[in-house]
Length: 252
Image 1 (cartoon, rainbow, N blue to C red):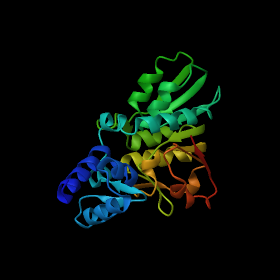
Image 2: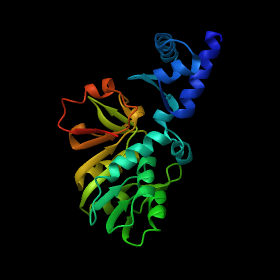
Image 3: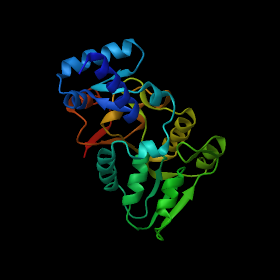
């Protein structure tokens, strides 16, 4: 395969998946990881993608919120792992928040029918939990974002102001040691910031593709999170720079 052809395919893969690791690209194209790193460096200089810790991120998906149906099928195995691990922290009679992330939706799909109160800004999560007669679902109002099937805006944040919950289970687009947690959509970031404020504990649900990423809109510092739950594909190298922070990292 010619170098130019490989570069085109790398760009296509990154844009399709949103993010991808060097190891995956190396295996896919049957070349060394060093070759892939040089490819990514060149493509970043050309403005075709952005390098991240251990891989690359699509410029498109980092600036614009990807449609829900695209995110729903991205990194399914890893998101399911994270969702299953997060469920172990849910206890009967808890009052919890599930945000509009696809990982939170996977968590809702696995949630047992026990006495819980769930606050959410996600249409998908609310519809999923409607099948559970023991779960009380409180759905936020506000402006509907069709790409994420979620409610955002001043009405959503004002609505959240009325409540206090034990635990918030949130995801994001990026986790960065210095910049903290961030999202591709500013309105989503504002809602998630308020969710953190009204929660006793915040659990950040993040598969391997989120680490080292600085997305468009900052949600908050890593000090606002108590526990990060990630999947087995997240490397020790990715997590190393977070060990000095006052939080717990759980690898499923």
